[in-house]
Figure (cartoon, one colour):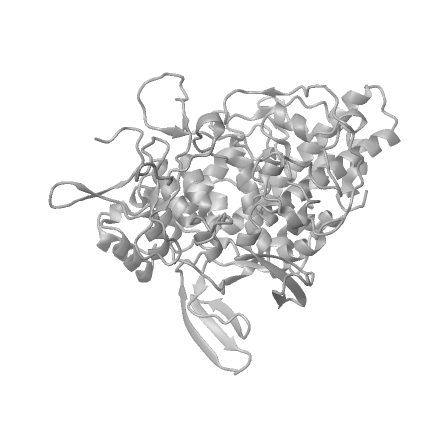
Length: 634
C-alpha cells in the first residue's frame, strides 16, 4: 500500500499478476540514456569557457540548498550499512540499486538519503504529499556570499573599525572554517577549509574560486566607499553607523552585479533570446522591468530537483591552472597556455589547489577558467582533441585533420556524455566508495515525487504524448535518444523528467531543450518580477530603490562576456573582467570579533528574503567618485 509521502518508484505498466513494475534503477538510466561515462572528455565547447559552468554552480548555490534527513545528533545516515544481513528499513532511506555486472560499482547498493520533509506552508498538520525545504533565500541576493541568516552573516563579518568588511584569513582568503568542512591531507597541514555564506564552498575548486572573488570584491568596494566618504568629510554619524552603511551599500552593489551578469550574459546562453523576451527577462527594457507583488518568488521543486541540474553535463573531468607543477605530470596546451591538470575526483572538498603557495594559484587558476572550454551540449560523433578542428554548421559536424589534411563531415549527436569523474567517482573517498551524479539526479526527482517527463511538456507548448509513436513523430528527440529511452523504460509515461529533458534537442541559442528552458525561464521570471529589491527598479508602488544613478553607472559596464565566451566579441565593452579582480590583492587587517549582534531581521519562512534595513544611499556627488572603483587597485 503506497503512502502519500512515498517517492515515485513504480511504472504505470503491470506484470502478469497485476503488480506494477518498478521503474528502472537510476544507475541504469544514467548508463543507458544519459550516455554513461565520457572518460576522455573529448567533447568540448567552442562557444563557452569553464567559467560558464562555474558561474552556474555559484548561482545555483545562491538560490537552492535542499537538506537531507539526518540521524541522531545530526549524524549522517548510511542506508547501505547491512544489519543482520539486511539493509535498514527507514523512512529516510531510498537506496539506489546497482545492476549486476556494473563496470564500476561492485556493491548492489548505492547510498541515498531522502530530502528532509517540510511542514505544510499553511501551518495545518493535515495529511498531505511530502514537500521539501530550501535552507537558503530563494532570491538572487548573494546569500552564498553573505549568508541567509543574521547569525551566519555575523560569522562572516569583520568588526570593530573594519566592520564594513567581510572577514579574511591568511593571504586575503575567506575566513577559515572547521577542519571537518573539507579534506585536509597531511602534506597540506598549513592549509585550511574556507567558510562562506553557503556551506558548499569547498565542494570543488572552481566554486571556491568564485567565493574568493566576491569576498575580495565586496571588501574592495566597501573600502572605496569608505575612502570617498572620508574625502568628503561626512562624519556626522558614529563610526559604527558609517561602517554599517558602507557594508550595506557594498552588499547592495555586489548583489546587483550578480543579478546583472546572470540575466544579461549567462541566462540568455542557457535558454536563448526568444524565451528571454517571452518571459520579460531582458535588462534595460522598461516593458520587462516591473514588480508583481502577487508573485511568489520561491523556488519551484521541479526547478531545483530536475531542470536546473542541466549544468552537470557541462562539468569537465579536471581542474587546471597554467603552472608547470613538478608534482603533477599532466599537462596540455590550449591558446598558447600550458595547463597543469588534476582529475576532478582528486580535488573534491580539497582547498589545496588554491593554496599552493603564499598567495595561492589564483591568477593561474583564473586563466584556466577564462581560457579553456567547458564541456559542450551538442556533440559530434567523433573528435580527436589533438589533431582535429571541428565546426558545427547546418546541424552537421565538419572535421578537418591538421595532420592528414583530410576533411570529413557527419551528423551532430545529441547523446549526452557526462564525465566519468561524476558518474563513477563523485565524492570518492579513500576506500574507493563514490556516487553517480546523473543517477542521483534521477533518484532525487523520484524522491521529491516529480512527475514523469510527459506531464511537463505542455509548459513548453509541446503536444501531448500518449505512446512511443507520438514521441517519434515529434521534433524534440533524435531517433537515437528515443531508442535509448525505449530500451530503458517500459512506457513512455515512465520517463523521468531529468532523462526526458536532458535528451531533448536544444532551443535556438540555448543549451537546454524546450521543456527545461520553459521551466528555467518561468523560475527566473518570478525571481526577477517578485523581487521588490531588484537592482534595476528605481520606483514602484511607492518603493524607491537604493541604487542611485551613480551606482547604476558603476554596475552597467560590468561583464563576464569575454570570460564565458571562447571567442571574445569584436568590440569589447568597457569591461572590468570580474575574473581578473582576483589578482588584485587587497591587504586587510583582521580585527578580533566583538560581542555585538548584527541588527538584521530575518523573516521566519525559509523561502522569504532576508530583510535588512539599508541606511539611505550616499549622494550622487559622492558615488560618482566611485565609478572607477572596480577597475582600480585599492
